[in-house]
Every structure is written in structure tokens, then in C-alpha cells.
Amino acid sequence: MRRLALYWHAPRHTRVRKEEGSLVSTYNPERSFVQKWTNRKLYYGWVVVWVVFFALLVSAGVRAAPTVLINPLESELGWGRAAISAAVSIGLLLYGLSGPAAGWLMDRYGPKPLTLFGLSLIGLSTLLGAAMTELWQLNLFWGVLSGLGTGVVAPVLGATVANRWFVERRGLVLGIFGAAASAGQLVTVPALMWLVVQIGWRAGTVVLAVIVLLVLVPVLLLMRDDPSSVGLRPYGEPDKSPAEESPAPSLPPQWRSNQGRGAALSWAPSAARCSGCYRGASSSVALPLTA
Image 1 (cartoon, rainbow, N blue to C red):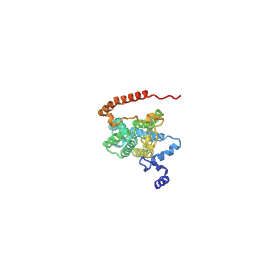
Image 2 (image 1 turned 180 degrees about the vertical axis):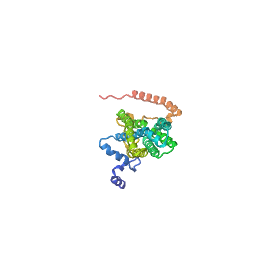
Image 3 (image 1 turned 90 degrees about the vertical axis):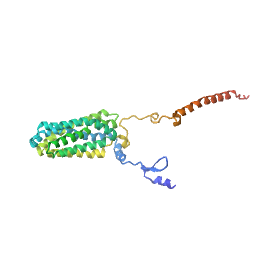
Image 4 (image 1 turned 30 degrees about the horizontal axis):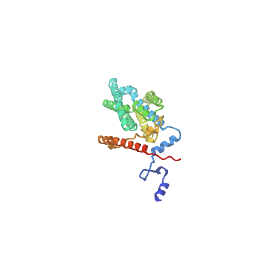
């Protein structure tokens, strides 16, 4: 009776029993947060889509930013265009080479930690690039670090999120991510050029770095790796039939071995003879007929 009273007065989310009969809490703060969105008839995957959209937007903007900084770097630091272009080329090379490694890591650890890492690397390299005075710093900040960061927050991220969260509307989601890459260059280049003219290239680069770091907030709070982490299924995934969900019956372990199979086969003739005896005995019994 005491256990029954404990069960009755327990919170609703704790009234689940294991097979052993002990109480276990199924409360999940992430699912409770997502429940608010599902009650509003909004699939939470669309929230993840727009978070990734802004991440790809700022990543593409930073990738296109060095084209605006060529003239200021030439006039203030005296670097030639060949040296500046070499640093940009290093970034583009690492941007392409880091794609397969980023995809493998996303499959292993999920897209959220990789997105946080990539955006942090982009924001840090952009912020440090505002204080550079040597050519090797340009190669490090705008070449190596920026190239690796933008290579992680790249189309491979969009493809991973689309495949994990959507079965239907997957083409639409990939189109949204493609638009983010184009819009990032379209918005960042004129905006950064205006900032360079108004407040200088160093202050304009700091503003760009702050915008990148601000995108970390919605990624940290709203992004999830896959639908199962919030108790959902991929959008448009067909329901499985009971036959598909139930596991196929399996033989006992001793029957799977050669000795077990031999023992099973040795019992088969005996079983057949016994069944034949039963049929013969039953056919020889005559039941009396009643008048």
C-alpha cells in the first residue's frame, strides 16, 4: 500500500515502471521544450533548418570577406596582391579539403558540436585577423583557421541536417541551404565594404566577427543532432507496419551450432515415427454407433 501511494502521488512524468517494478523518471527538459513547438503544429526540424541557415549565411560571408580587404591591406600594410591572394588560396584549399573529414565527423559525433566548433573557429580567426600586422598572421588567420572553420560550416552541414531531419521536403531544405550560401556573399560583401569606408577595415572586421559569434547562441540553444534526441521522427517518414517492427524469431543458441543441428535432425525421424503411430492407433479404434 505504501508503494501504491508513492506511485499515485508521484509526478505524472515519473509514473513509468520498469519490468523490475521500480519507479523511473522519464522527464527530459529537451522534450519538454520541444513539446511547446509541437503543440503549435510546427515541426521542430524547421527550427533547426533556420538555425543552420544563419550559420551557413555567416560562414559564406566570411569566406567572401577577403575580397573586400585586399585594397586596405595593400595601402596600410604594404603587402602585395600576390601575397594576399596566396593566403586566400590557402583558405579555399582547406575549405575544400576539410569537407570529407567534416562529413565523417558529423556522422560520428553529430552536426551540432561540429557547427559550434566551426563557428567558434571562424569567429576567433576573424577577430584575431583584425589585429594582424605580419604576413604570417594573414596566412594563419585568414588562410588556415578561416579555411578550416568555413569548411566545416559548409554545404556538407546542410546535407547532413536535411538527411537526418527530412524524408519529405528534403529538396526544399537543400534549396534553402543553397540560398544561404549565395545570400551570405550577396549581403556580406557590400555591408563589409560600407563598414570599411565608414569605420576602417579593422573595426569592420571586428563587427563581422561579433556577428559570427552571436550565431553561436541559437546553435547552442536550439539546434539538435537528430529527431530522436527530442522524441520525434524524420519529417514524412512512413509508419512501420507491426510486421516490420517485430523482430524475426531466432533459434536457440544450441540449435545454431553443428552439434545442435545434428541433435535436432536425429530427433526428426523419431518424431515422424511417433506421429505415424498416433495416426495408425487413432484409425484402428472403432467407435460404437448408437441406434
